[in-house]
Amino acid sequence: SKLPDTSNPFNPLCWITGKVEIGEDCWVGAFTLLDGTGGLTIGSHCNISSGAQILSHSTVKRCLEKSTEVEYEKTIIGEHVFVGTNAVILMGCTIGHHCVIGAGAVVKEGTIARPYSTLVGVPAKVVEQFVDDELLYP
Image (cartoon, rainbow, N blue to C red):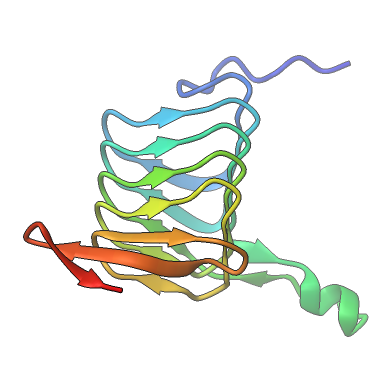
């Protein structure tokens, strides 16, 4: 059996692959996947809870169309973002600063979440958004 890569400074039980840029003062839980094969940026002061997966590639087209094409698209997580336990953020998403991604949420490919949004559910939807301490949505 292969031991975890202890050179990972965030958590030896987190799998980091590809080009991943992580800002200062971030916490990453165990059993997470940070997929930077298409590019992944995570801003400063973020918490990525255990079991979360943040992706920047997809093999759906390869499977359905019997091709060899793997799709890649950069995923961006802003500063001060909380990603809940077992949440999944698919490729090409942009999550604005100060967002909350609820536990178990699945953020669809290409989603753009405005700053100060809370997203929950499958597929993830914005349930509230704050600006200057004022609730704008719902």
